[in-house]
Structure formats: C-alpha cells, structure tokens
Length: 293
Image (cartoon, rainbow, N blue to C red; front, side):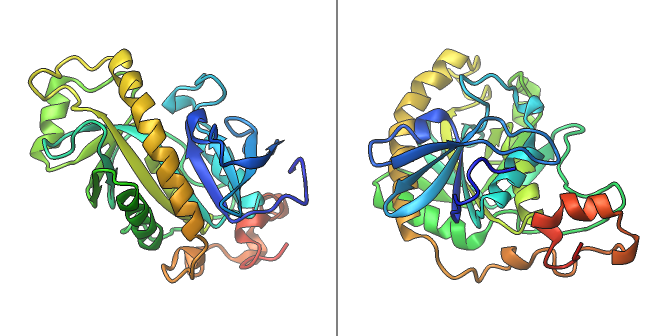
C-alpha cells in the first residue's frame, strides 16, 4: 500500500542518502510502501527536482544498516513500480578492475557477470513462470542519457564495460581480483545485478552510475581495500553523482524506444487460467496488462 495514493512519478533513483540531500530537491515528502514481498529498504523520499517528481530510495536503509545480501531487492523495485516509476537510475560504489578506470571516475556499464549466491531476483514463482530477455541487462536509452549527463558535468566518464556483482560483504581475495581481470571484467560491486533483473521484469528502464572508489586489491599500492578508503572517495563522488542525477532527471522522460517497457510481452508462459488468484492479485502492478485478475 502506498502511503499517499496521489503521489505518482516516472523517475526513481537508488543510492545512498547523500543523493537526495541536495538543495535543488524541493517539496520533499516521505512515502512508505508495503509490498507482497515485504518492506523496501527505507521509505521513499519523494520530491521535485528540475520540475520532475522523483522518488529516491536509500538502498541500504537509513544509516546504511543492511548488507548487500540482506537487501530486499524485490520489495525495492516493486515499490518503485507501484509509485508509477518507468526509469530507475542507480548509483553505487564499485572497485576498478582495470587501470583505465581510476578512483573518482564514473563507469556506465552495459554488461553483468553474476558471482552472487542464492539471492532472490525474480517476482515470479508460486504458480506463474516468466522468462524475460536479459542479453542487454541495462537500458541503452537511459544509459546514453546518464553518459551524456556525466559528460556535461565534466566528470571523467566511461561508456560500456562489465560489472561483476559479487556476494560480499567481504572484499575480493587477490586471486579473485586477478581472475576477474584475466576475464576482461571492468568494475566490481555487490548490489546492482538483482536490481537490473527485477527492473526488467517490472518493465522499468534501468541504468547504473558506477562510482569508482578504489582499484580493488590487484593494483600495487591498493592491495588492502578499506572502508575508510572507500568512504573518503565516496564523499567526493557524492557531489558529482548529485550533479549527474540532476542533469539526467532534467532530460527525462523521453520516448521509450528501448523495449524495456514491453519486456513481459512474450515472457509469461503459464496459462492465465492456471495462475492462482492471489498471485494475480499480488503481481497486478507488474502483470496486470497481460494477465487480468
């Protein structure tokens, strides 16, 4: 249930609390959402930014209380869907696996490699089966917008690359870091893969603003990644991220020519009359246009 049924918007942002602590965000309100999958990480902070209504979500909860493995990814994305969001911009810290991506750089990845274990990353099951296409896991339209926005702010930004999503919460071993480099991987983080999968199932465009904080542990002189090191860099990245988000929001919405908005069109393979009524009801915000209650 949405706390304010009249609050509707098209743009969502997932990241740290620093992203919505910007002077340009006005008319703020806190919106609590409950979902069939439980509660999101935190209440959504809804406000006006560049004449657009935007919903912000602190991925790890208020005060960063939730580990990557503890995140209720399904509730987080479902909550955005019930708020009417069509576009999700994700901002997150990553380690660099290549010399070219330096701390304070931004990477707009276009691929994933999954190194997580047993995380829930689908809305389906319990009597309904769907298989969405995920060959191109990030929305190309939104990724282009984010890249243009990052470029406009003067940031050092790279378009494309593979994001390794690891389980955590520990950082990589040296052997793992070297292995990912040998595979040609580009950056490593702990959160974005499940968000992207669920956003695709929810027919929401999704792109990542990967903020490089360190060289992981493979780089000479960076063989011991610490939280202090990451936080120090994140505080500088936060200013840039705010500017990029604000610019991207001003460019949205645009025509959705990417296919994300019709991802479920041929993905649901269960006979409609065999889907349990409670499942139809719970998933109505996602499947309603294909499977009426």
